[in-house]
Amino acid sequence: MEEKLTLFKNRKRFGIEKNIDIIFKNTALVLSSFVAIILLGIILVVFFQSFESFSRYGLKFLVTSEWNPVKDEYGAFTAIYGTLVTSFLSLLITIPLGVGTAIFITEDFVPKVVREIIGSFVELLAAIPSVVLGLWAIFVMEPFFRAFFVFLHNFFGWIPLFSTEPTGRNSLLAILILVVMLLPIVTSIARDSLNQVPKKLRNAAYGIGASRWKTIFSVILPAALSGIMAGVLLALGRAMGETMAVTMIIGNSNAFSWSLLSPGYTISSMLANQFGEADGSQVSSLFYAAFVLMILSLVVNIFAQWLVKKFSLKY
Amino acid sequence: MNSLYYQKRLSRNIGDKVFTSLSVLCALIAILPLIFLVTYILIKGGSQITPELFTLEPNPPGDDLDAGGINPALIGTLIITTIASIIAIPVGVGGGIYLAEYSKGGAFSRFIRFGVNVLAGVPSIIAGVFIYALIVSTKILFGSMYSGLAGGMALSILMLPTVIKTTDEGLKLVPNELRYASLGVGASMYTTILKVTLPSAFRSIATGVVLGIARAAGETAPLIFTALFSYYYITGFGDLFYEMGSLAVLIYNFALEPYDAQNKLAWAASFILVLSILSVNIFSRILAAFTEKTKRV
Image (tube, rainbow over all chains, first blue to last red):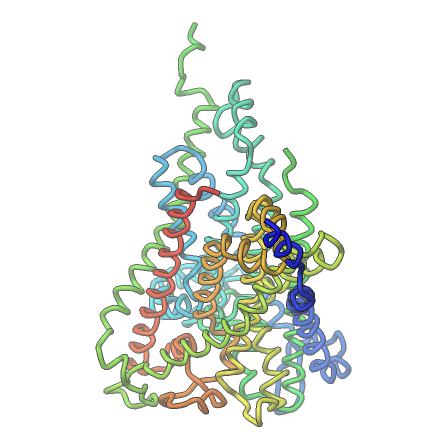
């Protein structure tokens, strides 16, 4: 008994163990601040590298579309326009398709097993690398849609959007491959937010005699709107930053055109194409373009996070 | 009396039918191309698989008869992803431990969580641009410019948010009773974390991390001007400091070649990449479902 008691008394924490505890905590603290360091580092590095171009062109860079390494004149309007047009138009197609699919998955039109298989299949597709989608777009999608594009041009050529003769790769194909990439994102986020709507809301709507789609449009969708909106914004951020599939299919031409059937450019495809062999003030101009892209996607992402915080479901 | 029965011609019932068919149509339009895409990649790529593919170097484009194999790219992808994991996993798990175990929801941890989400949304090509400016153009790594090491660093930036998030969320799911019990019997904080909370969250963290690695393995944009591409076998440790090929960049380069032989190589590489990424995803999904069923804590 006596022996045990001394053992118990001696069992104090050693100084070295205390130190390890403190070191462990501080290491974790330092590691977690790496995220902030990297984020700030990215912003600062890209900003300072673009400084030369920024001081030379100022905001004129954003509205001129000359890109001439020989004359050393740079303006990124074509690429910025291409980034915005491809991402917004692809979202415009994706939103109804994705939300429609999400509704299909969350309602009970077909047995639960089938819906779950479809749901996880769509999620799996988000894992396919974009470079593989680009390969598929070049060899399968482009030939498949060629006749359709000719038809578009022949019948709707009077609309500026379809005014050029389709020749191979173009912006419209980039929009379509972006739809394929964004669908899984929008669908799975919309599905999650639809699933989170409490069942009693639905039951209440049914109880007062609303039909299925009256319930969906007037109760379920409004309740899930903030989540869906956040998903859409995330998809928008992804679309603007998406590089490989778009670079491979958009045709990479800096000549500005309103037509979707002519080759175009996005900021990220411009970076992918030119960064490797650029030198001198072209590098700085590319960094300037990268900075613009980063600001665009940061704004969209921060807005998405704010939206989730502000309008998240409170039941 | 009539109103007790279902009436087909009521406008609300017709409307319901219309919208139901619209939603079915949406699902069909969304899913059919996706099914087509996966089967096409698997069939077209699978038919190009030969044993030599795994052992040979790719031939430079132009030699139309024989494109060679993808051995350097395959090994390169493994090496670059390993480098990325070696950097991102310790940093991410450590950061996640701080957020979940030590932080008290103050301004710092809120800022870090916000930063994690923002970093996850940074376009992948920006990570490449960043590493290019920081490491490639400054030749800071012993005078080497484009290198597998720089490529791995670029990928680690993309993996980091995923790892932190899964660690943070995995640890938050561990019941507090376990922590109280451990601290109550006199364990210090770091023993509690290393011996109790981390092991019980291990499976969910591991699943998230593996999915993050699979995602990074398919990334191309950060590699095209950090690791660049190489046609030659990777023979030793020193090759880390030189240009290194990867499956993703091989697909990009060879898809844009006008030669059929190179295009076929791109399809074969896509098959290997997609198959491994999909199987990792499916496996971890099954594992996660299995864990959920057997979980007792």
